[in-house]
Length: 275
Image (cartoon, rainbow, N blue to C red; front, side, top):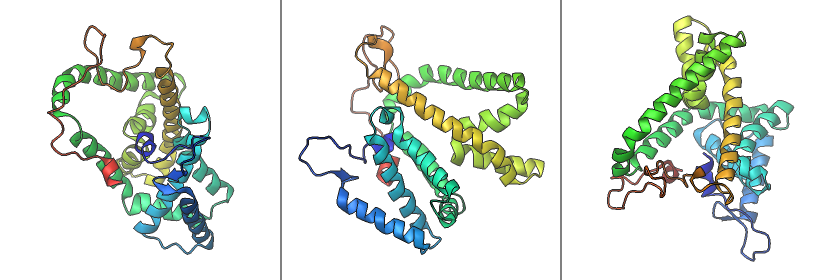
């Protein structure tokens, strides 16, 4: 998600004479939209609808992404996405934001089904925008370490759960599975409904057990991804430390794997174009 937002959120460089813009909009206009939205939020006049949920999520999300990306060092470690996760939750918990906002976003995300649309768009868009020739050449080489990593994560997670007294099966089903399934939208929520249907428990109760692990895992992975990204950009490290965005390198390791340009995806579609 951070990659999706990076192309849309402009960074402010001190000393430049260009006007500050956020998602291509002049900053005064954007902040005016934020003020109008906040007034509507605190007056609790926003209707429970798809449009309201989309406006709240986009405007506040872009604002928090922009703020996070302006903080030195913190921005390297996924500052924007971390603020998008923590600030709304903390503000609702402390009562700074009215409860109606939480109800609106929850309805927008779950009842209206925006999470299903977002996850489907990301997966389908990513596949359709990939280079077909690259997939054919790297797929076999990539699938073995991918499966090995998944199996290793399941086994290691289960063993740690057994050692800590949580249980091997409990850890896999309530911690490892939801995290690897895609976070809240594609992992925790669907799995809680599946478990509820098979066990007879309330889906909300099961989700309450799953959600903390998923949220903590989201923040940890953002931090680790930011740290690795920062390390990969350092010039003092060995040349082969970073893949520079390429999936695989040739056996000699001298150059990045690349595919020449006539075999691009048949449908140039991605979630960016949808957003």
